[in-house]
Image (cartoon, rainbow, N blue to C red; front, side, top):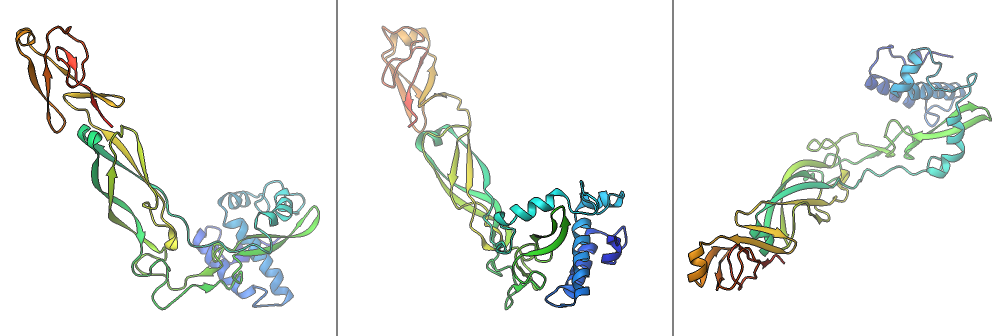
Length: 317
């Protein structure tokens, strides 16, 4: 069997990019659509098989260590069981002749930001403008990934199918397997003149402001979902979602118990006996503790009830 490095015309210490470039150059010369000769077809199979082995790090490592063509479990030069299963089941999973190229447009990733609130924001609700570092649509190409006046071109290796086929020998004889095209990466098209702003991605990193109305009653750890406010996808794909995680700061006078707010007011014994009311700080207003007589110290009371060592209860909505 010919040496894979010699087939591709590269040295044994060639990088992955050098191997890929060598394969593309030879594939353009030997592809059956370009060179229909039988000798070219055989060389194309050798070139494709050599690239399959050397482009995968594990297969290349096994091949360099003397493991034949780099595939584990081969029998006397025949393809492994993986080739057999790929042949019979690959077509059902989109790997056969009817397989379509994959789209460049992809959904963007979800994003997570954290916002810190005060207790008053929890009681009354709040509005926040949040700065988000995210991916936005490229204004230069508007998601086309191409320079102005250009467009993607059909891949000359796979003919736009996004897949290439190769013939291998297996226990059942010669079979044809299909795999994503290494030239167009399965897209079926290539971009000879990518956009200079986004590098052919259709999106760029930027900071933008997201307006958020936070409802009353949220608590620490709660996540609010904003559909479509996450990162824009590749090639102008749909946006992901934005999640806002809430953290509520502790308040010096109030604590929370479910939907209730508790505040402890300490008064002198003489005030508890002689005074009818006492002011205490509130959330946006001042509350009053009144008529503490005939109440036990430490008893919990409502907003209009007495205060000794009592707790004021306010709805947190």
